[in-house]
Length: 523
Image (cartoon, rainbow, N blue to C red):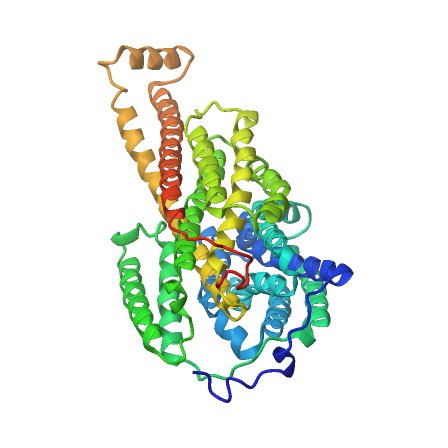
């Protein structure tokens, strides 16, 4: 039951203003799209610049990766708090403050003169970025006409999809042609313009504010639990996972804190995260499908460029170009999906997306180490079609039937699980790829012995070309490594392909009608 303080909302809330139209709606869409693109871009734009940043600040590359992990750790902690922040301070105020502070800390990142200074600035940047993506979708849906909400969701999805794809390309280009500092400085004009436009257009459309007590216990459990989990995922592979006492300790802390967090939030009168959303069938099914789908898709996006660079000898720029085609069809088909979303069975659309993912991932699993650039980009291009039919309908399923007052909480929670799924996928897919490569290397190496005529002929040919016995064995080991890592990436892609097929069954547990996002389907 709401308290009197909880009902102390702006008077405008009693009679909601009509949706924006015309130039105002276009300007709002552009501003929110730019701010969302900026935030999502910052997750990946730093990745390719880590060696340059580390060298500039006189630290090793392993220390340089803290510029990435500190940001993702802080952002993951704050994302599930989006609903509480929006209720406490208002959606418009929270979003504009988040964008403005993001710009401030981006500039501090650019001015960093030491790695500790950069890590602290990135940590603060991640903390204020948490609500940005979720509230960008919430504000678009709240101010679009009912018949165009599907298009709003499509436009939002396009920015979230495209930004991480072009982040490494843009980051590499800026670093090579200017300075790594500018990957942070470019946020300033974009973010300030976006914040100014959003505040100007929406300041008189603020959502009701409820001053509820702060759930300190829940907040502490969330921060410690998610922080430990994210730190474990970021560093587990480097520290050999559970062979490391630190990783084992972090795992125990994460499990204990998150278990108590769930129990506490479900019984507290003023939970900091609304876990009761999982009682909604479509929200529950949608978040699980989104998380597992992102696990597979993110795993592909991590292993594929790594394989290109470490095994096939691609540069970072060419690996980025081989990865980027996935954004082409995603951008072209997203508006079409947005128009169809109100009258199509979303389960069919998501099933089609999983079939596309399964087909293209299986296609990848058939490539050899001799695959050309032209061969590699075709399945990547087709994969973009699945992206459009995956992201937009699933978000519609997640939000269907929810009242407008719960959209911010639902968006924040679903984005949190999407982020965590990506982090888990990065850790698991890279580890699995390396372990399978070790296995294939051992199997292939067994064939290099005197009892194998083919091996004797190969070594004889190398030695006949002028190589010493040790050099011939070194070349052979390099060849085995090339084949082992390629066979390993085939295994990983085949596993993801099977997983995408299995996900089709889960999607059909969702229950129509899905309606228009924002509560129209609540009945």
